[in-house]
Length: 151
Image (cartoon, rainbow, N blue to C red):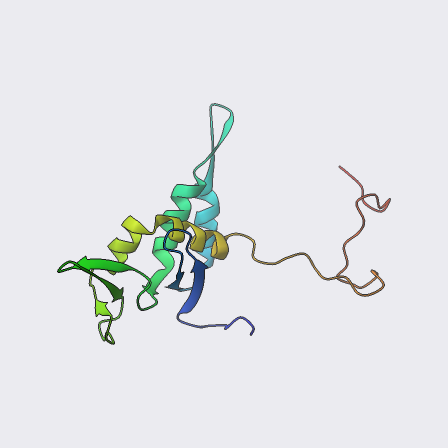
């Protein structure tokens, strides 16, 4: 399946090592301004040294583009039992709507928010594919290629 251009909501499924289950996060695509902000906030120079704030920025920007969770992606304890929550007010049993779903994800799923941001904001394409002969217009030059000049 290709990218769904203009989709209001997308879903990314993560293999969660903490729960041992799959966790689905719903998100919107970031704006160009948010992409620039992500890059600008991730690194800074202080006292002549490069400082990274990648994890903090990933959590912040992941939360910003988060639009929901897949039903049951998170569970909360109610009346002594664990129950799956949903981010939509029209919950289908056995899930219940929790109006604080975003705070729950921020508090207990910061690692997933960081992973979401990393997947969406950081380079998403692999290297161009080579043709069978290695001469296609999308092929990359070999590292020792004499046509590559350094500046």
